[in-house]
Amino acid sequence: MNYALDDELLLIKGKQSFLLVAKVKNRFGLCIETTHDEYVQGVDAGDLVIVSAPEDGVIEPALMLIDLVRTFHVPLLVLPKDHPGSKRIAYVVSVGPEIFTSCSIRRGTHPDQHLICSSDELAGITLKRSEQGVDVFPLPGSIIPRNIKYEIKTDLS
Image (cartoon, rainbow, N blue to C red; front, side):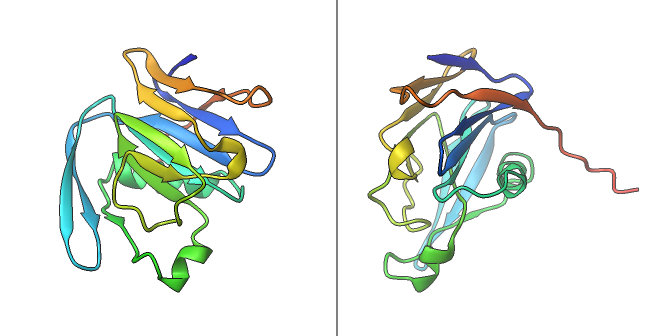
């Protein structure tokens, strides 16, 4: 199924988790920091930024994470697989033209941006950029994505 993503974001909400999807506006180099290396991944306008909340939560931090990456190009940090902090990570981010959700990876420990940690209920979904927005397949029958409006406020006065 295809969903338009102009100035909107797509919320895919299950009973216990959610994914928030946005399009990248401009081309940039995304730095991915690990304990041993720094990788720079090219990101093109139209690529996807996805935030996953595998255990649900409020949407505001997910909105902030999307803007930190797509607007301010904040680097992504990748923890080692055995890092105890990965259990406390409530929101994870992936960026790319096509991203696959998986519940079999540990949060915050996977540097490959074609994967994102998700809950069981949202596992196995492929999200792929398209001219109109994003193709989402297969989508569990009980999940109905919806577009939401969000605009970053940079004027703090």
